[in-house]
Length: 85
Image 1 (cartoon, helix red, strand yellow):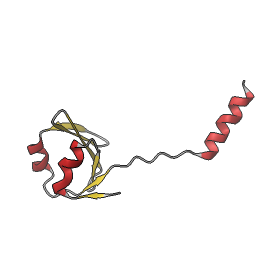
Image 2 (cartoon, rainbow, N blue to C red):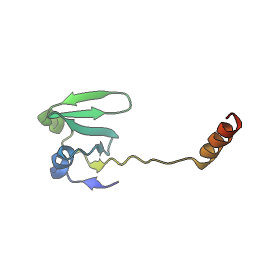
Image 3 (cartoon, rainbow, N blue to C red):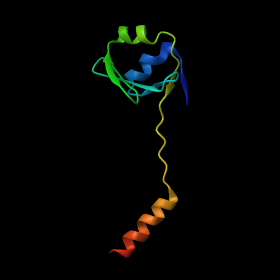
Image 4 (tube, helix red, strand yellow):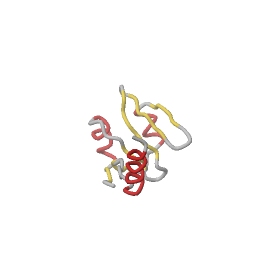
């Protein structure tokens, strides 16, 4: 995961990237001048100022979604599909 310096956070958010707060795994994105935060059990919308008051010492990473294909499940799917066509 690429680490983002705190002075570059807004630059990445304005470019449309999603960031991860490395301490707790919270996802961060920018929409309509509001910062959206999402974690596994909660989500919130905050202003830029509130965001920095909440996370003054946070470390950020560039969120990169991993897309993997399970070869075994893929093979099973096509076997069942061929059987019932």
